[in-house]
Every structure is written in structure tokens, then in C-alpha cells.
Amino acid sequence: MRDKLIDFILENLDIKFSVILEASCGEGQLTIPFIKKIMEHIDNFSIIAYDLSTGPYSKSLGILKKKIEKEGFQDLVTIIQGDVRNMEVIEDETIDFIFSNDLFCDLNRIGLEKTLNEFYRILKHKGQMAHAEYAPFPENFAQNLFIEADIHSLDTSEPKPDWFSPTSDEIAVLMHKIGFKDITIKYFQTGIHINFEEALKAFKEWTVDPKFIERHKEDLRKFGIETPIEHVVFCSK
Image (cartoon, rainbow, N blue to C red; front, side, top):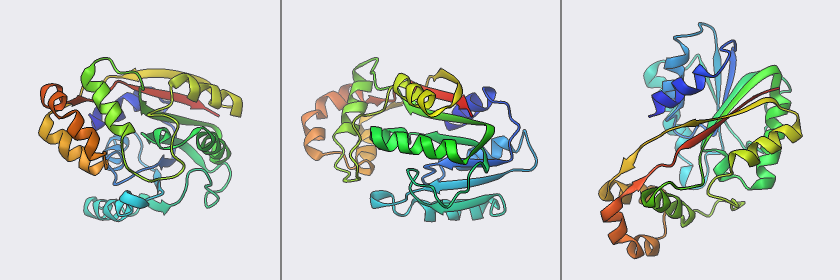
């Protein structure tokens, strides 16, 4: 699915960039396959892998570092631990392309606007962005269980987001307000169904409230959970 998402993003871009920022890179679930894909298109590039890496995800950047070393990508990737709402370590207009997956769902509205302002500051003139998020509207009961489980996470990260995920319209309006251009919304079908046993493993990682799991155990056995469709918002500066 991640390979298909990367292909989908790259198909909708003018691939003429050399300095890339992945915001909220985590353990590199998208970072490593992205590097391998982008190498098929361009020769000279570098990636800044940027993540807060705190709380239950405090080991993420350490795991990413080991993955990068295993692949031999040390010369391509710079890892930075930091908050996307204040990226003062990155200078103005130094980035050609910014992308993220499931970042905006972890921000509240104020945080999202601060983050987009930071992206605008560090992005070069005519630089591009692509941000993927799960749509907040379930198509079936399994998707509704996925969304509800996320909402019932006991993760104490602050500030607490106002949403499971912002709508594409909310993102587009903020981007337009800040000054981004060529705002386009496209949809990527994930189609990932997760059975009961795998769902329980995922819930443990997401720190889902055990009371929610117990209350919906029979539904989870019957339906499992399913990832909603993703909206991908593209824009340029």
C-alpha cells in the first residue's frame, strides 16, 4: 500500500526537486520506500526526515536511523527531531518538496495553521507539497470501528486534536489563506482490511482504551477494521 501511495503522489508531481522534507517521518515506514522510488526518477537529492519522536513514539527516530544505515542511505538522509509547528532549525526557502502521511490528524486547528505557515516559510518559490490523510467519513462499519478506535486512544499527546482527521476542504482553505497555489485534492483507495487478531495488535500500539475494545469485541470479530480512503492534498508556493 505504501509503494502504491508513493507512486500515486509522484504521478501527480513535477519531479524536479533536490531537497525534500518528510514531515512526521516516524520509523520510516514511508521514508525508505520513498527513497527507493525517487531514485528511479532523479540522481541528486537529499531528504530531511523530521519528527517530534516523543511519548509512545520516542524510539521512532532511533529505529529509522538503523533502517537508514542498513540500506546504506546515510549520505542521503538527515534526521531532525523537532516540532513541525516551529521548524526554526530549517532556513527560509530551502526546501523543494514537502510531504507527509497522517501528520495533520495529530494536530489541532491552531497547530495545523502554524505548521502550514512553517511549510510556506521553508518552501522555495514554486516548491511543491503533498499531504495524505485518512478521510474522516467512514464508508462501512469496519471503517467506522477504525475511526472510533483512533478517537478512543489513551495517548496523552498535547494538544489534543479536534478531529480524527481534518477534511480536505479544511486543509485547502487554510492553505489558500496562507498563500499556497494550485491546490488540488485527489483520492487514494487504501483498501486495507485488518482481521480481529491483527486489529488487537494495532490497538495495543495505538494505546486504544481497553474499555472500547471490550465493548466492541463482537463487532471486531465479525467485521474487523478497515482503513478509510485517503485524501491527498497537493499544492505549490
